[in-house]
Length: 267
Image (cartoon, rainbow, N blue to C red):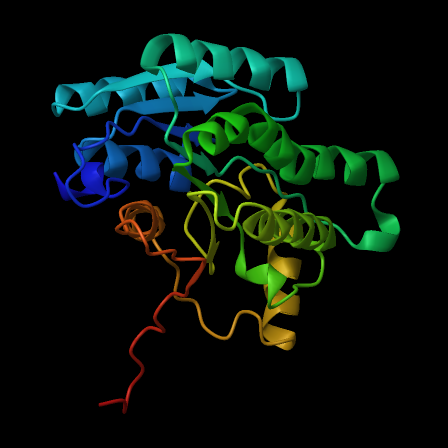
């Protein structure tokens, strides 16, 4: 399959490219695992809900792919280090890391408990750096690999009442953009994918009143101009395009927006 040869130069043998998907138990992460698995990448699925990762891995294997599931809490350094060792024991060298795990809680910044704010940044920002620390040294040593951050369009279009999430995604993108400079010329590609509004489980458990208030403010400030939503598979296909780009090509930043629903009178 051409994706497996994306990091091979002219005349080189195809490279086996094991891929890690952090936050693979549902939504965008689950579909990234499915799409990459279907394209022939060996997949390591990681999340706290490892039972759900196991089910997705079984689905990938049943379709002829190669996949295994492991417990992963990117908010905990020991968990990330254990996960990295387990993946190395199973697959050897990791070629692709997709940092998708994250959390989003509603609330005005002035009323957000600083401990809750710090907890979210520990997952959404420090968690990304934990993955970088665990996997990038090997990529740099081999002069080959892809690290993909699943960010959000809130970096470009902040939304009220999810300020903790906005701040964390700005921080994660700042980390990734700096890493792009630090890895330039090393053979390691660091890429950012910014999904627009997506039908995922990230807001599961929100109080309905909080959710409606976020929607109301989003419409007021133009961040929710319509009610079109992306499906997670659209982001997964974007990630497959990013990591499947041929050697010598770097898809640095990809913004994926939902198409507006057709309205009466449009042609």
